Length: 85
Image 1 (spheres, rainbow, N blue to C red):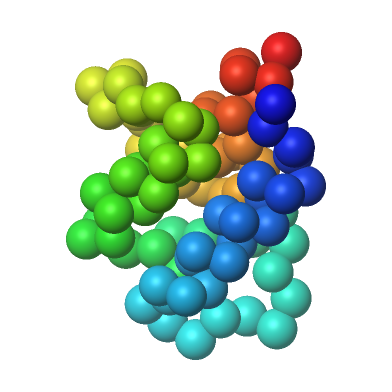
Image 2: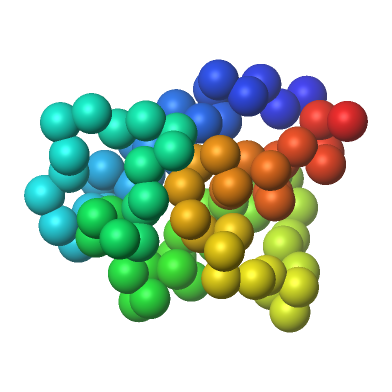
């Protein structure tokens, strides 16, 4: 079972640890992670590997759309909500 609060906290923690820019004071689930520089194109491969570890299974990288990386909400919806259903 994928606990939404735990998964979201782990996603935020990874993003803050690997941030390409100074993190904002308030990190909500709606914060645009690419726009504020928490994730850049070079980090995405490593981030997807982290997501696979959290999911416990591979991600179909051919099916990933760029908008998936908008914010923590979109990450949850794309990668974890289908597993929690």
